[in-house]
Length: 395
Ligand SMILES: *Cc1c(COP(=O)(O)O)cnc(C)c1O
Image 1 (cartoon, rainbow, N blue to C red):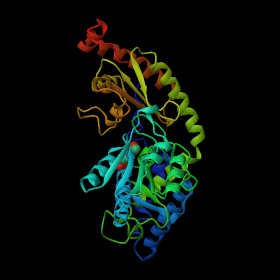
Image 2 (image 1 turned 90 degrees about the vertical axis):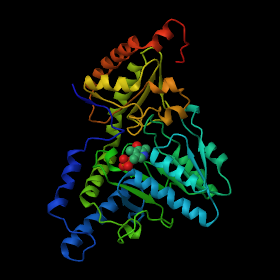
Image 3 (image 1 turned 60 degrees about the vertical axis):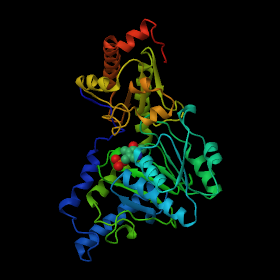
């Protein structure tokens, strides 16, 4: 049995999204910037897609900027707020310790340029509170940026509360909504979000396309110079087939959100209940406020990488932390941020589900994971030391 349980890394495209793209390769293939009829047909489709996306997010069409994906949107949002802040001598940015690298590495770059970065602690409930944000805001704060739903452990942040705090303080608020868009209900106006990043391949759309919602009037800095596309803020001929696929996938996800989530949370809860039976394990993430599809555990005495390879041999595609983190020897910064010590953080497993998963697949995972964990523990000198009392259990 083949089980794809790595939907936080990327998702299978829906048939609907693929079909929505096809006409834009060979039928409506004009350049939206061209004045002739084929160009204008493409332009019309582009603007229709923008309006449909805006409707899904609760904003105006002119507040949507198409990008190459979530990483670009995160970079552009943060750089824009930083440049705007600098004009007013405000160079303090608030974020969290468990951001995606697209945010963290952008903040690291700004820190080297003289910005001061406050990363909020995420040890309590594996989440942050709006109060933490409020307490961290200063006179010179030019941006609060935090992930909407964490991609490694699934914690869902109190976005509306943080939005209210930022609005009251007059500080721009950006959220990396890449894991949340299409999975939880979002209304950027009601939640006081000034900027939101999204990426199509996390909700069954194509890779390499995303968007940044920017509240009207907020001064955007462009990262790419060239033509006047995207109201002069993002040069380059628009990827129209991908945009059409993205919007079709987004509408589909928003229309079926309730039924999809019902299915996914049922599967997730079964998975959590089963994995919790394994001795000396701990679940990662905010158990109360979490994305529907992400399950993360640490198992003491094993290596996440070996676990992944053995699960792969059993047909299960999973992850140990983010796709960018696996492959390096350092444990995930997210697991360290929630307070897992190095040894425990190394034994992590992330299973991320979608509505394409089935109960039979969950049963297969629940048979395979305990087998593989036992196998690895029986080969592990660390586990022997734990069992003989030479070392003390942490979990
Ligand atoms: C996947 C992901 C990104 C990056 O999006 P890309 O479209 O792959 O660049 C950013 N933030 C989060 C939370 C993600 O899960």
